[in-house]
Length: 272
Image 1 (tube, rainbow, N blue to C red):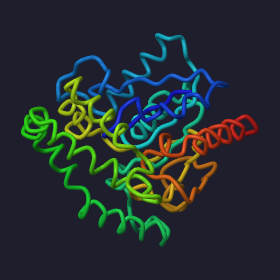
Image 2 (image 1 turned 45 degrees about the vertical axis):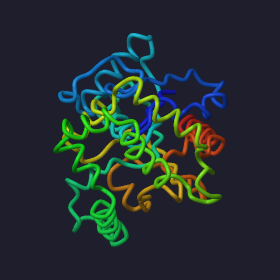
Image 3 (image 1 turned 30 degrees about the vertical axis):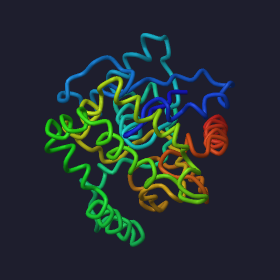
């Protein structure tokens, strides 16, 4: 079971999940450019190259067939890994399909609900996606400011940790202050906030469709959960598991539900 994290987090996303995965051989790599990974420059590392690096690492470890679970940047890497190595990736478990699909989607070919979702996602990017524009077009400027100021780094990351997680139960329901500081400190001590922008600076070409059997866990408070008709347009969707609780960092926020979804996905693939 290969677990792939996203941004602005790290392998720490899966800390609460791992004790629940004793039945699997879990591999949790630090993606290139992120905390705990080998040093990287800010450019030259698209999600496609990340997929190549992960595939090489898995082969070196002796794993030639595996399921992949991830979301955010990790979800992008998971999809491209499945497309590039269909003989190795047996199953995808995602918390979202890649937003890159929207770049190649023909709205006229989508059902009405999926077309409406494209419009909703567009509104989200206009109101909440300023960080994407900055990280993709002015990464060096941003990296200097965030790399020089712990307060600035915390402000940049913490607004996402709080804003993208489930607000039910108050600010500290998903993350205590100590946990937030741990996640931010991972970037500060490794000096990786700038290199974590690499996947934004070097975007990969989107793919039309992913043929690997895919299960999607939809957490209600994620940033832009998509309807089934939209998911079906881009992946070989076998199941959608909907949750009323949990947000963008679901493996951390709802580890029991996430582990149960992995089991359900694997059982379904075994029966297929």
